[in-house]
Amino acid sequence: MIIFQEVSKTFEDGLDAVSEVNFRIAKGHLAVLIGPSGSGKTTTMKMINRLIEPTSGFIYIDGKNHTKIPAVELRRNIGYVIQEVGLFPHMTIAENISLVPRLRGENPAYSQRRVDDLLSMVDLEPALYRNRYPNQLSGGQQQRVGVIRALAADPPIILMDEPFSALDPISREQLQDELLLLQAKLRKTVVFVTHDMDEALKLADVVVLMRDGKVEQQASVDDILREPASEFVRDFIGAERPGRPADISLAQITIDNPVVIDPNRGLAEALRVMRRRRVDSLLVTNTKRELLGIVTAKDLHRHMGEKSTIEKIMSKDVIKIETDTPVPEVLRIMTSEQVGYLPVVDQNNRLQGLVTRASLVNVIAEEWGES
Amino acid sequence: MMGLLSFILSRRAQLSLAIWEHIQLSIVALLTAVAVGMLVGIALTRSPKLAGLVIGMASVVQTIPSLALLGFMIPLIGIGVGPAIVALFLYSLLPILRNTYTGIQGVNDSLIEAGIGMGMTASQLLFMVELPLALPVIMAGIRTAAVTIIGVAALASLIGAGGLGDLIFGGISMANNKLIFAGPFLQHF
Ligand SMILES: Nc1ncnc2c1ncn2[C@@H]1O[C@H](COP(=O)(O)OP(=O)(O)OP(=O)(O)O)[C@@H](O)[C@H]1O
Ligand SMILES: [Mg+2]
Image (cartoon, rainbow over the protein chains, first blue to last red):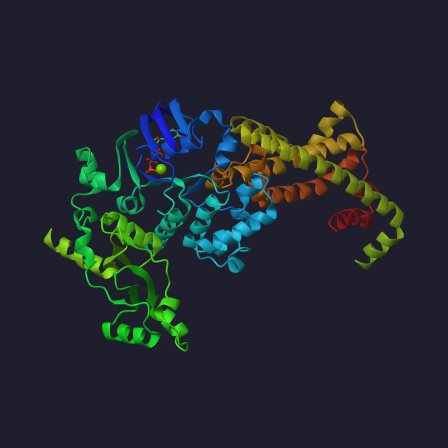
């Protein structure tokens, strides 16, 4: 938990970069600081790890006045990612990633294992990249390393100052997706600075919108879209974002009769159902329509020779949602879990329908067409 | 050329003594300059206001003709090996000091910020980031200093510090061309 209490920063030249800012960021939330250039986002962020000292006011980190923590120790417990990436060119990727653990005097053998784990997390083959130097990586790969370097010492808080804004649009999207994925797994308290409203909408649990060194509005993505606090906020988020997930109900995007199969059926039969209905996976339900698992064409092919039943080969841990899940949450789960479909169940785990990417796109496209 | 070589061989003892003295002078002066130059250079990066002044002063020393500097020092600290080393040291200080300073100043700001932001102490930042990244520039300064010193060290003979300069100036006074050439020849070797 990070709390800003009446925090102000006046630079030596008399400029009030940040004035009496109050906000709180809950543990495990990703907060996006957004606002026009010069509105004080970077200054606000750098006060958290004391790269800039506040002129007045207090910042509490997990209840502790952060000026009471020695700066070096504070920083080693706060991950830091900057737009310029900031990988050290004379250190290998592994050395860069393990830097903070090494500064903290951790066991080097442990750090090596951790380096490999972290590289795998962002799809960089450890054997291939571990011993390279930063200039042997693409911009997107470098920033991936920048992000996992901040995670290496497993700090509870991560600060990111426009980490993806120098990347091309495709890499940016990819890194945003990966960040969501990491965040779903690790649940860090993240402070993320950006100019880009779309990025904010995609990533934020909570948005802190700044203007001229003041907080104009702090709210969830949904609330800031629904109830902008001022004309300025309305202008900033851009008029009328079509297909706003909040306006769409879950029922609208749910297919009522997804293709199901009984757990006791054989594999060949399942394959035939898939072919006939032109789907690549089947939801497994019993006679009470309780969702038991899911089976994909791949699973079937892998076990084709065997005389087995669906029950034996299906995967039981299905990512699913309940009928009262808000649509933004549905989108979040789809992105962070990287699944193309989500079964919808009631409280008793009975299958009610299926949300797919295609059903989503159709509805959003329709909404868009109307407005 | 052959004559020069056989001449060098015939005077082996005298020449190797001269070479030894020359190397000693140069190395002692250079090592001292490396130590002092780097320390001062690093210190200046911590107070850039002073940097202009100090580098300016060191540059002034550099512009004094070497012969004049040596002469200049006789009334101050006398003659012999010590004063010669001091003069050589002063000569080689500037390139090392200047390159250390500019090398560290030239390290990308975002890397410094990343280092501090990750929780490096000032000395960790110096040894893990600033010095390694400034190293090529610092080495270039040391190389410049070494070349300067070895050349100027020949003049140290004039204030009685020995070295290959003895051969050169001995040769000049005796109009012995072989001796004159043996000095610089060995110097660049
Ligand atoms: N070290 C400094 N000394 C003096 N003024 C500064 C300093 N750093 C920032 N400022 C000023 O403080 C104000 C806020 O700067 P800040 O970097 O926080 O803005 P920002 O919201 O991050 O902008 P951007 O989106 O362009 O990065 C700006 O007017 C800036 O010029
Ligand atoms: Mg900024």
